[in-house]
Image (cartoon, rainbow, N blue to C red; front, side, top):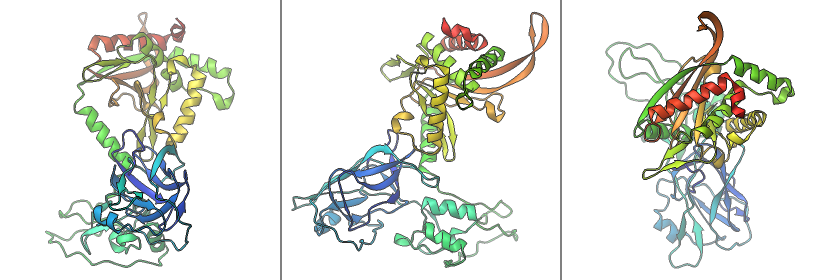
Length: 460
């Protein structure tokens, strides 16, 4: 399993594009692999033949573990299989019927080129692993993966389901324990769910032994399991996606070791709103900017005046960044991703708006390249459009800060001894105390507030 994303620790095979016995050319895609952020192509470095697939579609594999063996047609791989464990527990695909011309032994690995991902495709990839077959000159590329499984009430106690099948079953309200998988090793795959939905293929598995109940429980809805505790709610479980696992890991990494404190300030947004209207008056409809685009530009400008905030802790040093590369939190079906606006301090608001729209669209389609969502210097999370007035955001390591933007709404405030109505917005900054002290964070927010309340200050 090759490494396709800077943050990935394991990969999930979305699908093999080459079957056993099929030949491939240098640069041809062998498989699609889900990383924690996008679906990537695993491409061949030279010509060859797929001799053995050790891990099938939907399986999750740690980096460096074998997933397949490539070489030349007819090559004896028995010694290699014995060396790596003979594919113990691995799903092995049947050889393709198509014959190919003999090829020299090769090794294959992935490129970093992202591909278009379907919603049901999700997450991981790793680094290439080369194995030398004893007593032979040829080499094959090998890679493998752990199976995604969940407890089952029948058979051998394990139910292996591909992520696509799990999602389809959940949407259709199907009980996976009642299905017989037709994939390798009895895995339930997409076609099994489609057949079950059509009423053409549903093989019930062994029924679980009745659990002792204190009292009779209400029947459960299709796809739900009865709780073990009498009277407790029935439930259903879905396998976690690679992205959700990556989010959980990153948040644990952030909230645990990083000493975080929070600063909140209220900003009068009337002039920023007027500023946005003036910009949009000069732009065509498809290029109009949002208030969030104005905020991104303002934050970038404020960071340039407070380099202590545009920094990160590096154990034995503090790294100060020359530019403001702003990560913008974008909600996608599998979780959250932060595409980065590079050099936001050097770009106009209209250009920032165009990049945000383009990156956010590709983020939702999982087409971002790793360098487009890693390596930021500061982040912004805006939940104002969802009606959230105030919240705290979790720092995205190794960045030292993140802004949580609430909604802007009219409120009565006192100005010059009189009560007037102004559009007010609450902003909370989460600060890494190893880099940002309280006074430093307060000074940054003061500058940000001044710029938002008078956008012309960004020109000074």
